[in-house]
Length: 80
Image 1 (tube, one colour):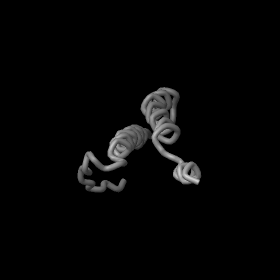
Image 2: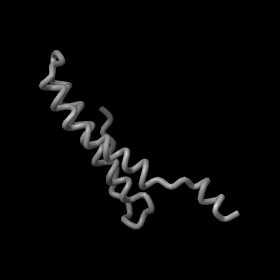
Image 3: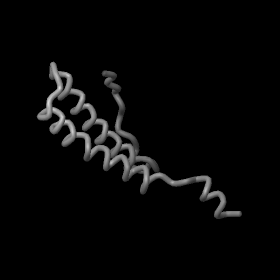
């Protein structure tokens, strides 16, 4: 795993809230990786735990994509 030492950005930055949300998602993904790293073979118990970890991360990522990211090309069309 690549552990980057990323400093806290300026709260006034346009992407600050998205940055925080993506780090939360990344932490959930890292927890899922850690969970399966200790497993020798797959089983339904581990799969269930992994889904419990990853499904909220997926929902949060989908929300960011759908609600927080602007279609800048459409914004430019609005000014024509």
